Image 1 (tube, rainbow, N blue to C red):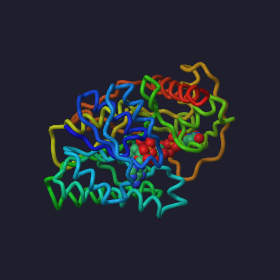
Image 2 (cartoon, rainbow, N blue to C red):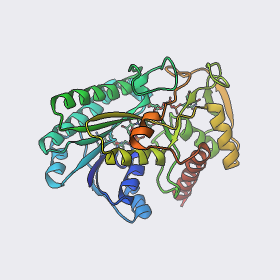
Image 3 (cartoon, rainbow, N blue to C red):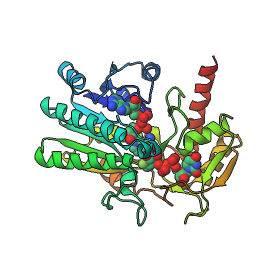
Image 4 (cartoon, rainbow, N blue to C red):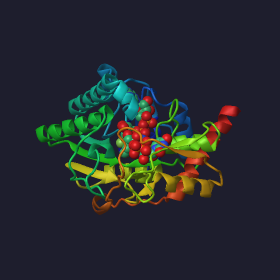
Length: 335
Ligand code: NAD
Ligand code: UFG
């Protein structure tokens, strides 16, 4: 199978490419490197011995995107490309709507024109808003709280309508919970540009002394210890889920949550990180972050039943691998 991976130089895309190449699929990548860098492809080659074909194009440029479909034989697309910072999406909504929607519509038009119908789309647990009860199943009502989340929901709706109009499409929507961790080699991982917003990259920066203290946003949530509860999933498990989605014999329109189903609080994650990495993490409790919710974790039942999806990695692995990647990146920078 020849798979076009959009946003393949990014965090989740790069780990997924490793899974695809290791299972002998051919990979073509399109990425404009707005939130990633080219050396990711060299590191993928170090891990797998193979380097994907690469196009440094902005997917909002339809003619350039189209030229890939003209040149390459493509059997399936995994669509990761997009902007994803929640707070930036609040301050720059037009940038988010333009980038995430235009790129997706261009992609879908090219797919239809060149008779490529198999698509796996990166959605997010953010489409569930603040769930009224837990665990979250795929049939929960959808509601978003920020422009980033709204782009995901709008794209999901576009895909629903597209499938209704053209049932040749074979579409899988994957709603990710909280991916953390990195490939065991420490060669690829999450490398956000600027100050990180998400918990794990920030926690890692504090452990490395790049930031002084981790702000824990509130300890008065209705959770086990008052701090926010999430469903952290190792990025390599998430990547494997994409392979299963591509190989799924069930065709049509499908939606799966990808998470472990295990709730973890901020404090529990910090304690696990300190224990397995044997490093102290200075933290302080601060005010709640606007828009945050008490708890969110999935029921993994549907993904298990239909995709045979299970998670191989534990929270301890996630903490070890995130830190290992960050330490290796620092070593490289200082060389
Ligand atoms: P990432 O930023 O590391 O990767 C996204 C990639 O898309 C980047 O390499 C970026 O350069 C590229 N890109 C963005 N706009 C583009 C455009 N117009 N043309 C070409 N390339 C473009 O993000 P990630 O964490 O790997 O996330 C991948 C996908 O999964 C995103 O769609 C994101 O919204 C979704 N998602 C991520 C998380 C998470 O916590 N990481 C959670 C849920 C959903
Ligand atoms: N948190 C802190 N301090 C920080 C960062 C986060 O205490 O410096 C807390 C948050 O309050 C929350 C938990 O850590 O309780 C997780 O926060 P993240 O920012 O890591 O993740 P979110 O669950 O808020 O959101 C992420 C992505 C969204 C995506 C969602 C579900 O940012 O885009 O996971 O996939 F939709």
